[in-house]
Amino acid sequence: MTGPHHTDSTAQRVDAKRRLHHVDAARALFLLLGIPFHVGMIAVFNRSPAVPGFKQAGLIVFSLSFIHAFRMFAFFMLSGYFAATVREKRGARAWLGDRLTRIGIPLVGSLFTLGVLQHYFHQELLGETPGGIHGLPLAFDHLWFLCVLLGFVVTFYALPIERLPGANSAVGRRIGHALCLDGAHWPLFLALLALWSLGQGAFEDALPRHRAFEIDLFWQYLMHAPAFAIGVLAWRVRVGERLFDLGGRRLPLLAAALLPAYLLLNQLSRPLFGLSRRLSAPENFVGNLIELPTALVLSLLALRVLARVAHRPSRAVAFLVDGAMAIYLFHMTFVIATVAWLPHLPLIPEVQWLAGSALVLAASIGAFLLVRNNGVLALVYCGKVLTPRRSAAPAAA
Image 1 (cartoon, one colour):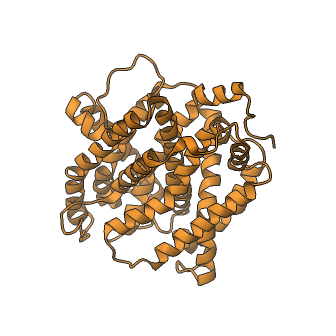
Image 2: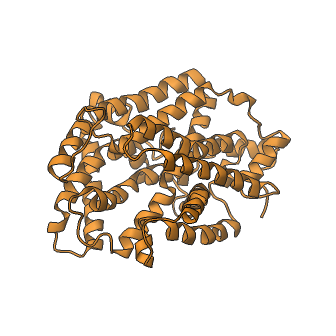
Image 3: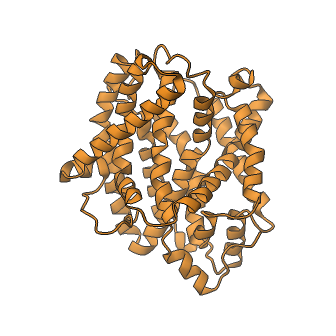
């Protein structure tokens, strides 16, 4: 395998300025994959009774396990990369103000509108008894990611990024090689990621089953911090262009080694192999150990595939990037309503799942189309006031 970008100024300018169109597509895709994931998970674990056949449907179970293995890791890795990109271009204070507006307003606005509606839907449509947030009738559901993202924003703002190793330093070059799974130090990089994975897994295992949502948020922050940090470092040492389209055989070989082990140790997919959902202590240890390395490898593999199929500007991608925030915020309300009546569809579980996911996506896009032309609603649910585009290139994150 060849090394990451050399330290010459031409390579650095290419990585800093070239638009990575497949990464734009990934920004939207990794959020929107939450739609089929949440349809399946709520149908199995939140609906009372569960939608018949979903737990036994191999396509559904393996798809949910696969999506869960890397989706949020990939999202936060790209978030870190774009955070470093925009901070360097605009300056730290301007970037912080923009982030607080584009993340904080949708979080508060959605929590006190969609959160109230989802709390009611959980109770009336799914037969649950939702606890809310400290007794308030608010469903937190998928909104945790905005809180964690805000946590990373504040942390990154306080971080003196200029002191981090750059592309011209020897340390920066070694970091670049390791991030790209090349050179002498990439096994150490994966080992450190595995140790962090083991530690956060042990931390989760030690937490009480019924706990305040703030503790869950802190655990999510710790779990996804390496992904955000990898994105920041990829920008800092100028290897983003290569990292997000990583060639060679090492990546698929690592995926082939890690994914089967992950599926065998995943509590959702284990019954399909005739195994108990309950893990033994050694199995739990190994499962915790490989979780984040698996997430990294699958994230990079997904980006590699997208680099082959989405390497040009696209109006569809531009639309989805603009609407990803609103679509994701709205989708959970539609997921709950859709899952409530899925058993009434005279279809096999796999088709129910796909049809339900398509319906939720269509309804969520429709909601985005309704709010995007209203300045106030666009600010609340999109994080910005949208203006008509003349080009297909998505705006900077």
